[in-house]
Amino acid sequence: MTTATPTVTGSVQSNISDEVALRVEDLKVYYETPRGTVKAVDGLTFSLRQGERFALVGESGSGKSTLAMALMRLTRPPGHIAGGKAILHGTDLIGLSEEEMRKIRLSQMALVPQGAMNSLNPVMRVGNQIADGILDHLPEGAQKPSKDEMRDRVRDLLDRVGLQPMVARLFPHELSGGMKQRVAMAIGISLNPSVIIADEPTSALDVIVQRQIMQTLGRLQEGLNAAVILVGHDMGLVAQFADTVGVMYAGKLVEVAPVRTMFKNPLHAYPRLLIDSIPTMDEKKKMVGIPGMQPSLLNLPPGDAFAPRSPLQFSAEDARVEPKLVEVEPGHWVALSRPSVEDFDKYAHLVDYR
Image 1 (cartoon, rainbow, N blue to C red):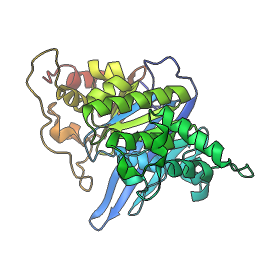
Image 2 (tube, rainbow, N blue to C red):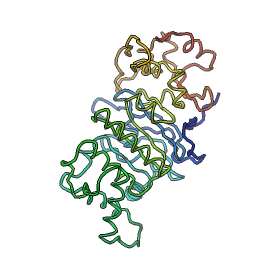
Image 3 (cartoon, rainbow, N blue to C red):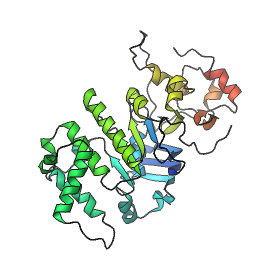
Image 4 (cartoon, rainbow, N blue to C red):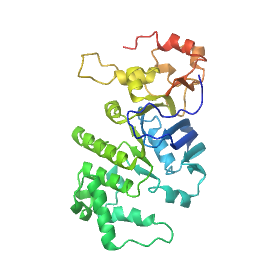
């Protein structure tokens, strides 16, 4: 076994290169509050290859959106990046000045936000908002596009996300939820970024529109050969979209695996219980919930944060062992609190979770 950086592998796509687009090393994002320090993201490490679709899942409060904001350097006080690295094509984003990071946003790494209505300017027409991002990132000394050139470019972007040219003349409040999300996607791909972070892009949309939005995101990603980090709760949606799944709990990764492996043979108790909670059309089964509540990040239990909710019945001594992310098979990483696979088998493989 090794404890090196977990690299996203085992994809179902053929256009994934060996080039690492983004490498996150021991990233920590803390919030300082009157009651103490909230460790929202605490030591995350993973690598993402160009063309990869990596989904981050977990309960609300596990740190998924905090990670997305940190990678874009959009964390606001009382939050701050307490340590670690986020290396995009050789450049450590954490060490950049605000102006240097501003130039990278949209041009190299783009965010498709969770609430498009909250991120679009309500008093600007859609076309002007798309053009604004393009003009703001013109290379130094580059000639400003003419009005006709910019109009054609905006129309092309709207067409790529499945919207009619007339949408450019509308205000955000004149669009449906799905149309607003498509506009956010058009802004996100306007400068052909190599990494797209989609923070719950289907939140508050009905299931039909969710499917359309995810199909659009997949088509755009393939066209750009971009790497995608998809943040979400919906395990069914993740199963259809992602190449690799990372499961977060209490600010840490507890398991990273190719999507088929994750759904067929999850090794950590938390992903197993998440997957068991998914209804299926193939068989009738008792709905299974995860007992207890996610612990407060202000008062995490020592060692394994999931131990109090786990059906594995760890001893008090075992529960206090700090888990480490270990590669148990190629491309499959699990947070283990035992020093060897044999000890872990005693807990993970001999228990009937169902």
